[in-house]
Amino acid sequence: MSQQLLQHLQQLGWDTPLSLALASAAVGSIVTLAAITTSHSRQRRRQRWDTALDLALSLESYAPSCRTMMHKAAWAAAEPVGPTTGEASKGVSLPTFSYPERIRWDVLSRKAISELREYPAIVHSAREYVDAFREFADPIDVCEQVEYECSKAAMSALALARITRRRHGAVALKFGAKVSVMERELSDFIAKAEAKGKASLEQPTQFNLERSTDTRPFKQAISA
Image (cartoon, rainbow, N blue to C red; front, side):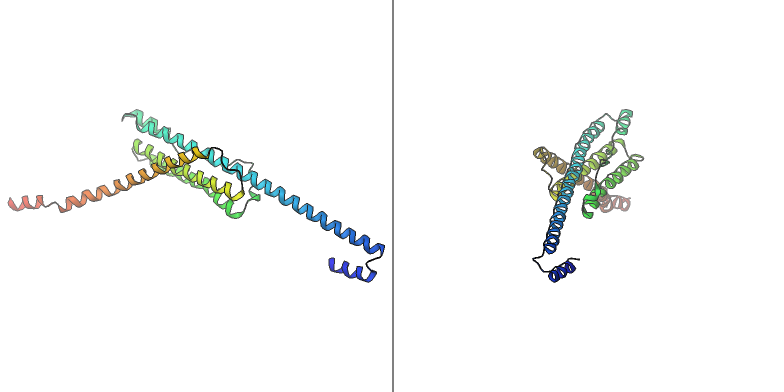
């Protein structure tokens, strides 16, 4: 269309009133289109920023909920062994998580959407594991497992929130120092829990090995 208009203007001559009017209209259309495009891009960037902030705040508010449940699980595990221990453990579980319904997913990139939408599925899977574990495990073990799952969920939520803020240029968290302290506590707890779990798995193996190398029953049989 532009090429045809240019050829037409060349045929008419640049100094005729009609040519000047057509040229002015073409320039005006281009300027208007550029302004609309710029406005639309600015609006979409604003929507992306708002959406990223809502997602980050949702994730960051979930982490303290997990931390509170960890305290509740620790309290339940500290109850004297008995019926009260089992009753207290029934009230501890990984908190549910969901994003606000007003989220505008269409303004985000596919990679961001994939990472963010995977998180609720991960939390749901961990909750199902805890519920299945509860069916056959000791109440104290259930409480410890809840603490561990909550600590991992909280760490993942804070990490994903930080990535979301940085990726979309959202403002930094005001209480960053407190979050850093929480992350260190969660990281230390996860490390200790995993070390404890590894030691408990290795202990039976070591015990069986000691029994297999114990020659005292064999010697007693010979002497008899």
